[in-house]
Amino acid sequence: MTGLDDFMLRALLAGIGVALVAGPLGSFVVWRRMAYFGDTLAHSALLGVALGLLLQASITPVVAAVCVALALLLVALQRQRRLAGDTLLGILSHGSLALGLVVLALMEGLRLDLLGYLFGDILSVTRTDIAWIYLAGLLVSAGLVLMWQPLLADTVHQELAQVEGAAVGPARLGFMLLLALFIAISMKVVGILLITALLIIPAASARYFARTPEQMALLASLMGCLAVGGGLSASLQWDLPAGPAVVLVAVLLFSLSLAWGRRE
Amino acid sequence: MDEHTKPLAEMRGVQLTLGGRRVLEQVDISVCGGEIVTLVGPNGAGKSTLVRVLLGLMEPEQGSVWLRPGLRIGYMPQRLSVDPVLPLTVRRFLALGGKSSGSRVNEVLQEVGAGGLLHAPVRSLSGGELQRVLLARALLRDPQLLILDEPVQGVDVAGQTDLYRLIGRIRDRLHCGILMVSHDLHLVMATTDRVVCLNRHVCCSGPPEDVSGDPAYLALFGSSPGLAVYTHHHDHHHHLDERIAPLEGRGEGDDRPG
Figure: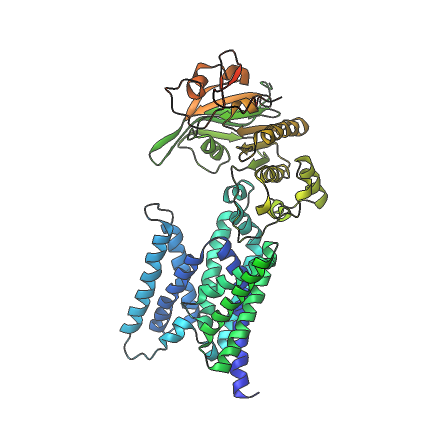
């Protein structure tokens, strides 16, 4: 295999691994109106990167840990009623992004590809990255299968689900942990600022073609894979930045789905 | 009726404050098997809160809630709004409450008069159809106690009478206890065995004929124009002799249940 083929193949493998998980996870983000929540978790990932570099540890697990910590903090803070949920998210989202940037800037003698973290660097994924993506991806998928029914019941009607004895609390918490894990593995592919796009756009594109939640989740995975394939090809063809190209193809697919949905 | 049976669910001396406002005060209520208890009261009287406390969704500050051990509850919430971005058929919605065989689901949908709706998207349902589907989900749990929060909400008057008749038939067949919330006493009168009139505390309770003539009930719902506690429209008022008369200026006629 030539060098060119090799890095493209790795990029494709990584992108597809992320897109497959993003389908069902993103569907829930859309159904539960948690797009801003996803953004907030993603922004905190930069703080994780800084921390990982400071500790000289492997970055992916540290980023996952920081996202989990922020998710737990958010759950705790949302119990108070003084500030509206989105205000709180805004504060934490931009606060953690700014803190991450400042900490990275303060670290002396560090040559860091900041743009790579912010917008993704899929063409430089290593075999280790791919292993992380598929390992965590399997974990996220297994978790989603386990909590699918209670989480969906909770999404449709919280109190009804609770009265019917669904494990609503564990499912909610579990979902946030899965989201945190997903962000840690997909950061390298599309970057901190574009992760939410990969969650939301394929799911929204799948809406018009689905009759059940499960169909929508699977179709979202498919849409995500198409976006990754198309984006990488475009990036190769016209020398575009890969992460943004993937997102743009996803937006294109969404527009097509809108047109199709209007025709229906 | 059924004064001698042991209740399925009972609440004693329940008190609850929300946002600095006392919502429930010294509330006692009980439901027995085979009995239909209707909770009436003005908006903000704490009806839904009382239901939530009974269901264990909220903790009372004082007082106690007792449910018969192992009690199977079917709950029909006040409203269901499914986000347009979530594709959901009636079948999938019903399955969220637990696994049931296809034939059982069909049977229950037939019973509530929603037979043809199995594959319909939940968002396409009319108000009355949605209420019937919600009722079906509660019935699929094979309940001993049904708790219905405003079961006729968003349904036209003719449909309301139908729904109340259906609820009466369900009680007769399952012999379950039913606690329902309503803000219209006249339509439920024919169906209900006992009425509890709630305005943060229990104002009065008893058979519907008694309650509709009770001074406490009349003070809350009655014709006195000086009392503006209760703002939802009435197209008729109650005379003390239980006659129901249309209000002047409205020609909607008598909606007294048949």
